[in-house]
Image (cartoon, rainbow, N blue to C red; front, top):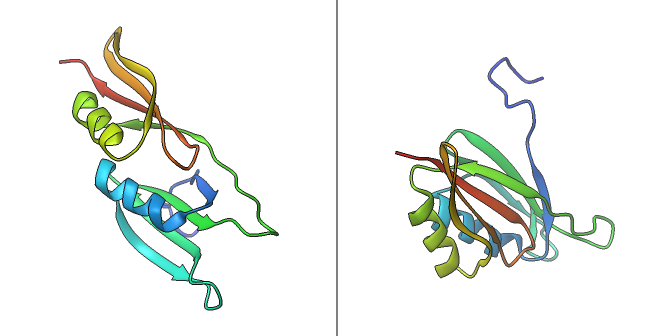
Length: 124
């Protein structure tokens, strides 16, 4: 491990359209890009690191050798309603409408890259 502050588990998504995914994450979740390297021959993303509120997600464009691989991502946000709406406005498909569960407000969306995001906030 690099240091004691390194995140132990880091999602790594291999996508068709990594640049568009990065823009989606920036628009919906206020992600920042801490690193982005492109393949010289194709201008596709070879490796990128995004930070969302202190958590890292790594992404790259899929290739013939590295096929697309997506995930379900659970994300805590300040306001699930606002973030859910941003996701829909940025092309995500609703897979679960906003609902209250015990102490949480939660919804589910699927982005254009086939990732499922479980958008969750604490009920106030």
